[in-house]
Length: 423
Image 1 (cartoon, rainbow, N blue to C red):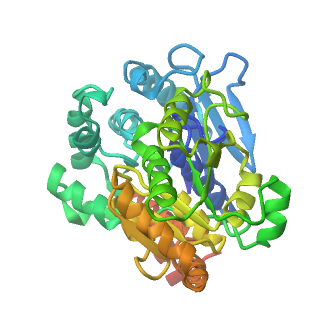
Image 2 (cartoon, helix red, strand yellow):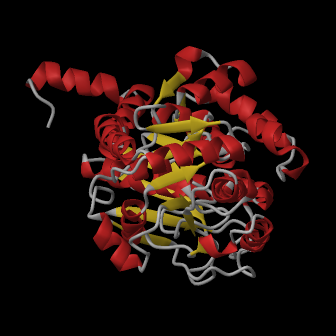
């Protein structure tokens, strides 16, 4: 099949860890890579956000089309909706001029979905939509700080009605689609996110700490991801304060992420807020901000940590817990959304309520005081990710959805009936 992936604000070529660069970038890059490996042709359409970008970039036999829509500068995703008509017009013209037709478009995020709707109307190409985050869920948790307009809700409602398939990333996502958007369960396909076995796997902890320059004799907690308030890094800092001053257990926190390679409050204002919280908790010497890092380095962070912690207010899926478990590191996560699905409580890690530093502190102390339990959870997490969450399996599941909605499933079935095997 020839597949168009639309990801308006999240390029597969971007470095993850910035305000608007995280799980969606990783998702799009990996499903594109895996779809090509199993024989499909993939183009990724993303907004051109730098003036020197070529119209078409390439990686691993994948074309990335940098769509001219709005100024060629980085803009917060909350400011991109007015540029989506231009984005759609470009894509429709581009697709018309292609030598071979696209079988399906897969829109990632609601604005990409709006583009996909216009393509479906103009060209009749089937549309698959992954929301990655739902507007009504975001508004519930972020309230007035949600920068998206109410028009998002109407767009999402239409996408739920018109998309040939809506991809839910976890059972909570499916439940929200049904109860908040009146989605038809028959039009929902549950396909989780994943991890890359070649990127994330167990390594020697001592050597990983040596490589990063981390102390060998400390109990180390890792927080890795986008630096925005809803990710709950402040909750982790407060929990470490409780560990030190109320429970008598010290721990060091390493925070990876941000808008620059070196931790910089100017580039990432959230770091300044978090540093002030660490000072208020009297643990400023135990909280280390290490900036953003390329994918090749992240496996060393996960392997160097004693425990990975992620306690966002809400989380549609969350890829970082999978990556940590794939490295054999136990996870403490917020009991929300996709984390509730990926982390098996009591087996691969522990789940705690979001915004509850006391509960998180107790969980941290539990794992620090019982290294054998932490080791068993790490081993169980490794087994769980390998059994369920590899990107190769995710791509195969998506390919089956694409084949069904585009009619290629029937074509493949007839080929089997005629030739005995599909080649």
